Image 1: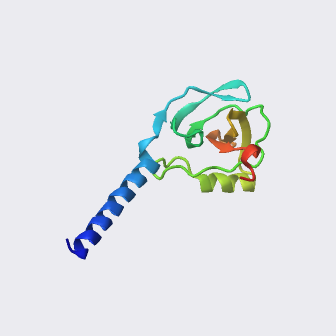
Image 2: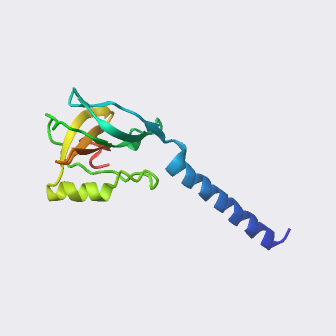
Image 3: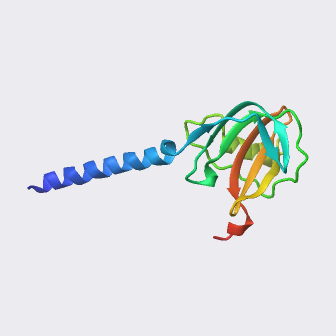
Length: 144
């Protein structure tokens, strides 16, 4: 066997492994979700135009976009930081949501504390009723 065959084999293996890893990261574990209401601080609020994804492999994979007519009566979320969604889930733009939060154009609510160990659920609402939801690590994992 020549060195050329070994190099071709290694490059082929690396390419297939990379493709599999990319697929697992962005597609494999996500499932679309549906909802008619969202619970925010123990109160159920009706929602419309729901588009959501989640995965059983990690509590941090939740992302949702929807319309929320009512303004929630809930505590404000400490340090809301939208997590980036997979590229194919285009209704959730973490950069735009973060910019709106920093500019005061949207309000982030603590929908659920410790929904999973060390994980809070956050809902952001714009004045026009657009809303977004995700889970993020809380203070339990702040310095880790």
